[in-house]
Length: 206
Image 1 (cartoon, rainbow, N blue to C red):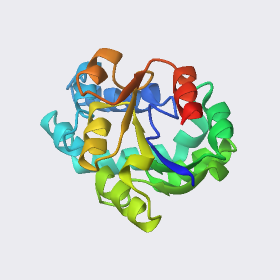
Image 2: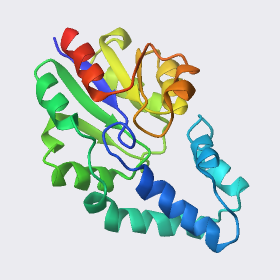
Image 3: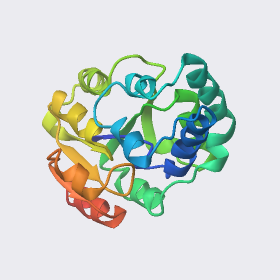
Image 4: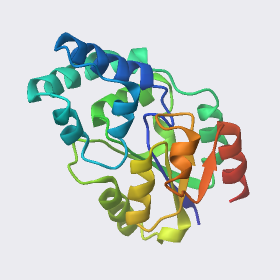
């Protein structure tokens, strides 16, 4: 019986930091509100991301404008991390993979199709579904009649690891995304890797 992997997208599969942070940094500079990389990383520490943005002065039209920018440019401008397609191909016979992301579902679908990766994933869930990540994980496990200990949640932020723990599923942290190795280590994931090759080695053993 196949096991299950829940993948975050940005920072795990897609190398999107420059695209996302670069956009918000420019927006805040227009309003004379400098946004540092450290402040931006705080958005992904497990808080409500929009609440954090509002603390720095963001307004709803900014969010709506970003969603349009994301839909128009993200699929073509953001690349997958080296090695990810190789991992997907290696594990597809042993794992059912699902994406659980705060990105827009249509952006995720378009990006996966552009890179020829859509067929590796059973379901793709984005922020259009208002449930938090842990609720989505629990729902999918129930639908597929899988137990929590038969899966992994792979994320690149402290918030991802917190969501994995809420769903009571084993977590894999990676440090090639939005949060550093040290920041991720403090959230105590079950596994923590610096490079995709380490991730593939673990999954092939499972």
